[in-house]
Length: 114
Image 1 (cartoon, rainbow, N blue to C red):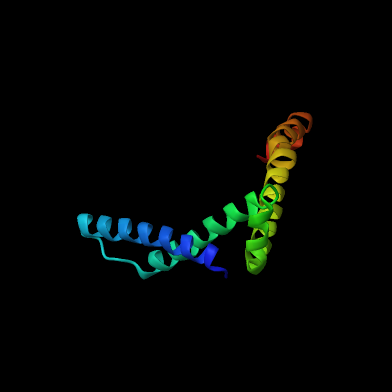
Image 2 (cartoon, rainbow, N blue to C red):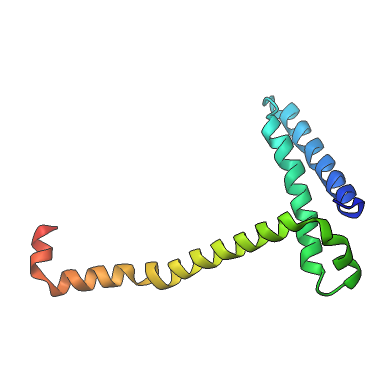
């Protein structure tokens, strides 16, 4: 990973980890190592996501994102699943209740079974 991606990622993670540690200290909650690691990974994702989103508009940024192929794969999988969920919700689930209640109204035997 290039320093142009690494340094902002570490800076964001440091701020978030400090906020988390202070909040844990204030509330008396035990520090969770998983949250610390997740903050570092998510900070990297934020910086790489911003770079990916800006790269079509700024050729200089496009040159920096050569080493973040994993984020391109993650972004593609995320778009795939979000689109699939949206289609399922819009096409299947939005008409599911209408089809079920329509078939019950038209079939008196189905009413008796329910």
